[in-house]
Image 1 (cartoon, rainbow, N blue to C red):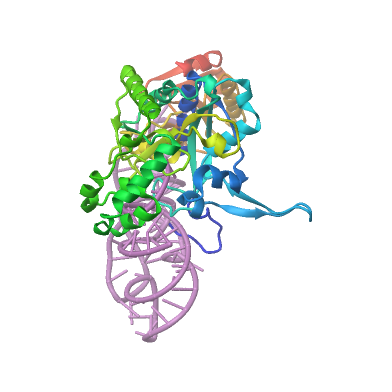
Image 2: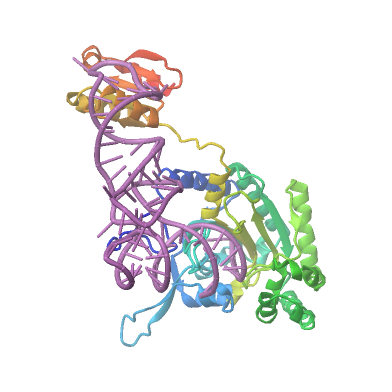
Length: 434
RNA sequence: GCGGCUAUAGUUCAGUGGCAGAACGCCGCUCUGUGGCAGCGGAUGUCGUGGGUUCGACCCCCACUAGCCGCCCCA
């Protein structure tokens, strides 16, 4: 597409969403809201930017997201006595939700909090299909004091079962659920140390990327796709052997509940997640090749974060949540849709001659107020053109000419059947509704 | 952040160192009130931006920008 130098355009990695695509976005969000509300979730809206410290402490200083992908700036001081504050566009929404939970003392209600959000997130990555610098996530968080049952494996299973229902209702085909447990914070620490140790003698035989990961983030070696290294990776210690008894039992109960609900899953011992706050249950839903996502095939991901509230200076508030990449979900639905079913409007009013325009608009007002979706043509159009325009956007055409105005009897033609009838002004709304 | 491919009409894309093309879409006519078909006619564009080579560049070279693919990472 031509891009003239002098004109402004959406910045790299951002994009405009236009009709008719926005109809699909609304459809997806409507279904998501419906499912979330049936499971007892209420909406939360947190600010789009937060104190940089929130993400540094919550998501993890060493993660790629925080160390190189955040949009951060110094907000100027309001008074000389004040220091400038470092602010950041949110790269994810969990930290903001937990911050709000702490700030509003939601834990003091003693109740389990079930919250969902839908909104844009920002990460400065190299743009690619299904990966944008401003992207949309729909997510939920379940958290609360231990006494509210927030730590129960039932909650994990409920969230996963809800996701299976949501994807089915949206019509996503061929999704796969992969689950794993990364244990408690202590388990992870011990596992990380063991992994580092096990990698020492063998890492020189691995690819360059994995050698680097062995130093910086040993967990990431596990999801390496390098074929030559698979044998070594398979021989590395398994996280499952490092789980303490309560984490083991927790994971077993989650799987048992999924079995009871009939939700299919695969345990993937190599599934590790990149955000520091994850503990115990982690999961990912992926879609098959050919679903429009290329290698970015993770539709959503999430897990437990039992220590996050405390990391942010709050009370103990174990929780679990996930985020759906809405852009990716839309791409998947578009790629999987056999035929695009553009919803047609109920009627197209074709005034014959410009002197009938006013009457056409008045009729449109009447029908629209009666709840019908109506488009109005223009009396300047030749009838042939009106028909062509009408067939594109509406199920029926209503012809409004001199005869019709004089007699009060309108001509209505249904495109699908070719049937044409005369309808009185009084019956028109009912006739169009049929 | 790294590597590769691409950029021509509203859209999808051909194209050649010497006048800018097709299909679809759009507009008009055949055709004052019954379309989808057909025939005829028409409008489209700084050939992504900037520079270089050349008598001459949409084409060759360089840089930039953007998109796509892979990596990294993640949703």
